[in-house]
Picture 1 (cartoon, rainbow, N blue to C red):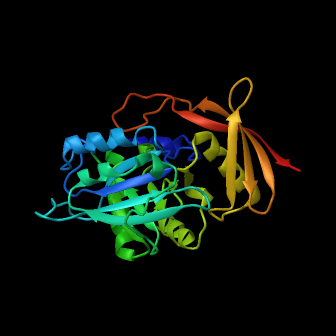
Picture 2 (cartoon, one colour):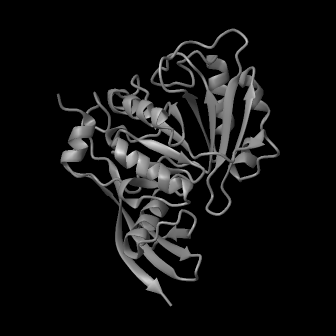
Length: 301
């Protein structure tokens, strides 16, 4: 049976620059089943889900639901919901945690401030193992359930990190996909061995470019430029690189990537499409997904 993941692999579609973008993630525990649009199609009150989505719009905050790997029973009466807020800026990333009796309490947060990296004292600092969030929402795409749920279960059993299932990371055709905090790198096409390598590297402050889809803090041109510099230099330290970008004359982007040691590179990125057409998700009509192509990379003085 062909799936969107098998076709994407067969066509050797690049992973780079496909990460969902978010300066800050707001992750809310909600047990029980998830629908395709989980914020309004789960046992979270739909009105609360819509309000959280609206509050996050345009702030850089991305809201998703999480649950522990395993059986997905409903919350017991009076149970609290774990909440994780994570900002992913290079050199300024942080993870804060708390719990709420009712997710509607989160509507009191200052979403614009969270998106800008100001947590306002929310919860307590997370200083433990990396957080691994594996997309498992089969109602959105069957590949996420077929490939993501076994991976989440194995990682949780191995104890390499704190593991959660998450509703949506984008890029179903790259399943199994995983977001790792605190740095906010997304990964795809992970085997259990590859995922454990990623979590060990994250614990040491590094990234694994081989499986990387990009750092969610950057938009897609920036993700492409950062990945290109990592490939050229072999740099894997998660916070070694920062960047700035601007539109290029005639289209595309000019991205300046800077290393903490003073080196810098100018990377030119153009928007393209992946051919031939392929389903971006199981059951969808084949299309030509957009992609980011690095057209030049130049070391600067």
